[in-house]
Image (cartoon, rainbow, N blue to C red; front, side):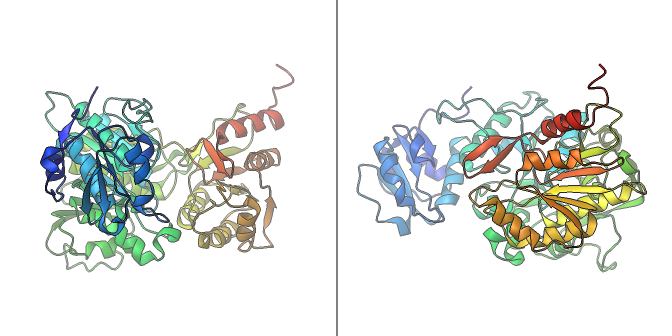
Length: 541
């Protein structure tokens, strides 16, 4: 199925994208838009994007050799070699790429209701919960995020098919895809909308700070934005928390309504920004937290509704329950995902669903039967019911997420149960968090197994050395650099009642090192280790 024209006048494409139309553009026809010089086809428009280490001109000759008819470049890249390709000068090539691809695919977001979810932690949980609620309510909805792409009507991750134009998967798995993936995905979702639908198809999208800074979503306006929280992460990219916050703020400058975690200090600050949000849905699970009670809407011009989680009960491994209240809502919610953080995640998903017109009963029923998020506090089903310990997988890979994970386990572990934490830190990423995570781990876990976690181009032993600098040397720990062996070590030495946490990879089914990306399934490794070292039936059956 085709979601774009076979060709378009350059002048029309530039106009649709909101870009300047140079003289002569009306005489040129383009056959597609590409940001990858290797995949340029004859007649394509190629956007020469300036990289972090290279100028846009670096790849233009290859694009021209492959038949590019038009080169879109920034003014600073005027030294591109002369060619027969028509040249268009733009202020920002990344913004131009997103706008051109959006225009090429017919501005698909206009046919959709876009929900953007941003924050350091909780994006995937909130997005997946909201997706489950909308499906329960019978609302056509898609999802783009960390755990995959779900097209409207699909039960599992989609978009593994190959694009005939680019000869690559339509979805590579990036949390917020690059424009050359994002806009064809949105076009596919718009095309899947029921012809007689009473409402627009909803698309829930995890929106990262990288995506906002790199203009991947530049042409989009969001019907609803959700802010989960903010803590130290991506400092290698942003440099400071202030810049990180400013990146997140951009989403709310292009959103009509917003759901805000007001228990988070950055969320409270966001409420005071002059963003053009029409209505704020403000969530409290821990009280007003210094918000002035006489100011009904701290953001000023927009109207707002406050929601509170009251009568909170932590049900151990069975999840949480609470009463969601507002001037118009009284709803008892139960969610089977354990952990204190589940209260705010479920609350924000519920409020977002109510904002989108879902009935309170549908919200209640969907969250009560929610199956959980892959790799988020996910319990591994071990091969023998008599095995006396449990193993959980979680994506926690930041100091804040790790602390919340461990606090949640402290909330439901019984007297005498040990918390055994297997964790590492990613390579080619923010080094400052390594010592911080080690301190948290030493303080909150009973035993540590320090290992690798996507070391990428770094030496795993050097990453582990950074971690060890923050480990309390009086704590119980072991260093096992090979992650598979680290999991086996934790399982082999497990005691009755132990809670083993495999933190950092979550849903990921791969490991990245200097040699590239390799298949890696923590579930399979843990199950096989349990069979080998603990299954009481192995010899008798």
